[in-house]
Length: 107
Image (cartoon, rainbow, N blue to C red):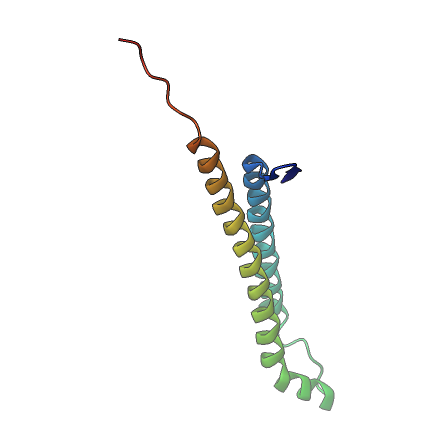
């Protein structure tokens, strides 16, 4: 977005490019979340056979659920930014083309 004497000009191509970058980031985060989930499954139970391990084992499901809920909320937010950028790009692109008068053919 650039400023001019008349206000702002949105460069829809840049908005679209940023939208694609946020989509790639969302996909990257999903992959890391899935890898972390696999690590939890693979390493369970990673706790010792003492009282500390027993206590942590009781608390681990709640900790794990909170961790993944936060991860999912962040992924959703990144996806939301991506979608809003995509919509804005389409809106600005449409508005830019709306001021163009189609050429008429001479008869």
